[in-house]
Structure formats: structure tokens, C-alpha cells
Image (cartoon, rainbow, N blue to C red):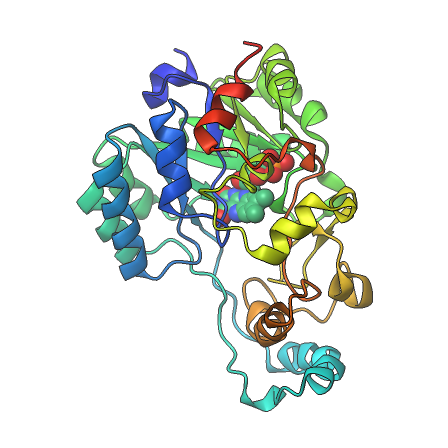
Length: 345
Ligand SMILES: Cc1cc2nc3c(=O)[nH]c(=O)nc-3n(C[C@H](O)[C@H](O)[C@H](O)COP(=O)(O)O)c2cc1C
């Protein structure tokens, strides 16, 4: 069975869910163009998620994907939080921010029973996860309406684990990918390899379809991934300049500049490694900073700096998520980009 048959789509292109950078509009545009549009929910409240799903339902009857993070919620460490705030203190001073007034708390929500309740109202055709899979009970709830389940693997071990736990397809996320690494079997970043090293190895070891992700940004890249065994391709960065994306002004400017040629994995924005364009805070505190609290607790203390800097037109404290190939970013409608991506198949 092809990926198109499995997911009910015309083109083997999945628009990568990109929390904080897009919502229903991008998902609708890609689904209506025959690919699989995705709605990322990691940064949406339950009510916002319901509204976005209702909007999608009104605007397309094509299959779409709804995406969640499924990390374990960490126990906050007062010591680590204090170390993190101490590291950020010079910046609070520079921007006139009272560090003591900033509440701690998680910056992103994991998939939950409440989210599953809302999903059950809408019964999306596809649900994807990042950082492994939720509990067997939550998986069963998603399966109840026949949704196909996808999740990212960054190593062969993770791909085998995901297949054993019932995914319908594995997303092989290479090191080039923008945004958070889906890594969940270990914290050892030396296990992380490029897309075209990872993809054929995963393809040899699992029976479910493998979707390639990371650094693929044009029709030749899509065709090359398919030649290496991919059943489809998940593309994020290339969609970030589309008018339907919610990419911020500072993020768009960075993607269009030479800065986009310099990316690194950093934990300073969330606590987990994610690939973004190198900016001031990544250079000065990281890109990997031991003081950053566990995911997703690092976000709260840095958020006011981001807001203040952005209000002054600066992306110095913003997560400028971007893969290693920003050359495919085009300011064209997402439907047109989707069609261009399959031109060599
Ligand atoms: C701005 C941005 C935000 C992302 N947010 C998510 C997310 O919310 N959920 C998720 O599963 N993956 C997320 N990712 C990772 C993508 O699923 C995918 O692995 C990546 O975009 C593929 O590499 P590429 O960006 O080089 O195309 C994000 C990527 C980017 C660029």
C-alpha cells in the first residue's frame, strides 16, 4: 500500500507540523492541494485547538494531520530554575525586566485525555506525535475512530520501537531538520545522523512505510528521498515563508537573510535540542546550555526577553527554527509550493 492510499491523500507530501509558526490556514492550503496539511497543537490551549479544528473542518473535507508532543512532564527543579534565571539575569537587566515577576511553568503541553476528547469530536484521519508516543490508553482512544498514527524516529532503535508500539508509518527525522529533534530513546546527540544516512537504514529495518524529513526543500530532494526508499516526505522549513504560515516578522527576515546558512541545535528556548538560526542568545549561552531546565520548562524565563526584543524588531531571543536547507523557502502560496515539490516524481 502506498502512503497516499494509507493516508487518503493524492501527493506523498506531508506539510510538517510547526508549533508557533502555523495554524489551520497552512494545513488547509496543503490538504486542499492534495498533500497532508498538519495542525500542530503543542502550543495551543484546548479551546484554541477546538477552534482551529473547527476552522479546518469548514475549509476542507480532505484528510489532515493533527500533531502533538508527548514528552513526560518533568518535575521542576528549583536549583536548575535558579541557575537558569541567573544565566539570564544580565539580559533582564539590559531590557529592564524584573526577573522575579516571571512565573515558571511549562512552555508546551503534552498530549492529554482532554486533548483526546476534543480530537474525538473531529476524528482527524491522521494524528502524529513527536518525542515517542503517548500511553497505550491514549493511543487506543486515537485508534478508536481509525486514525492513522505517525511519529518521528531519529535513530534505527527509535524506528523499531515505534513500529513495535503500533505506528502506521515512521517519520525518519534527519539531523538537518528544523525545530525540535524527535529524539526519545536517549539524550545522546552523537546518535543523530543526516536524513540520507538515516532513511535507508530505517527502511531496511521496519516494515511500515518510512517518511523522510530534514533538509528536503525542492522537487529533486523529494525525488532523491523516494529513490532511497521513502514512501513520502515531510517538509517544514520550506513552507515557512508561505503567506498562510504564521511565521513572525523577525523569523521571516532571518530566513531570507544569510543568517539562515548558520543553524545549530540549541536547548536554550525550551530545554530540548532543536535546530534554529544562530542568534545572540544561542551564541552567548549555548547553543547547548547546561543551566537550561528540562523541556519544556526553559521557555518561561526566556519568554519576556523574546517579547521585549521582538517588540524592538530583534530576533536575538527568539527561537528561529530552521532546517539546514532554507534555500527552498519561497514566498508563494502553499498549494503552489506543494505542487512544485512533486514535479520530479
Ligand atoms: C518552525 C518549526 C517548528 C516545528 N514544530 C514541530 C512540531 O510542533 N511538531 C513536530 O512534530 N515537528 C515540528 N518540527 C519538525 C518537523 O516535523 C520536521 O521534522 C522538520 O521540519 C523537517 O525538516 P525541514 O525543516 O528541514 O523540512 C518543526 C520544524 C520547524 C522548522
